[in-house]
Length: 266
Image (cartoon, rainbow, N blue to C red):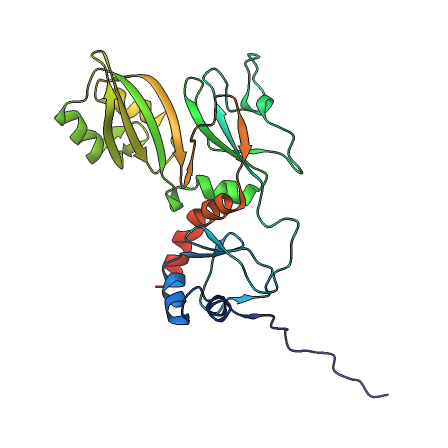
């Protein structure tokens, strides 16, 4: 009895992303190549790479704008679930508290599957933007220092920063767990006793903003996180939540994976 080989060549589906996007009339293949190299084309939440192939039912975004593909098919789920929550002061970022204090998880809706994972933390007296996802891998990428997602805060200070303090905060402050610095710090108004500033940094160490300002002799009287990567708190009321729309999730995923793409293309 003779044996017959059953090995087959791997199936290649779809056309290259450059060809598909060019056929939509969005841009020429050469222009699309440049957009891909710059990390501005996102396919199903991940930066596209040259040679990626599309079957026609992917979610494709260029600079955050959805591109409708020919023969696209509806799909039930394209992105992980991500929830934006406006944390009030007085809630702790934990699933349960031995002291019986209110936790952020008590204020969240039931997830469609799995469980909510907090993307970082906000301390008891800090309010503002807090992200949750059911995707553990995405949560890890969003928190990992390697990707350096910017965190922006509105901070009210007792007093005003002088030039020496501003320079120190921009150049680096030595804390007990290492050096820390603000990426930016801008005054945004205030009165005689209190001044508001908008600050940003690219890591999420415990109480880092408060400790940095305390190190230069300034007391924080209020701290609100207003943005995490490309996601902004906006006008969402305290204690309220909303799911992120697919373009927002795609932008967030691209921000978490963009550095890997740029490094691998060198």
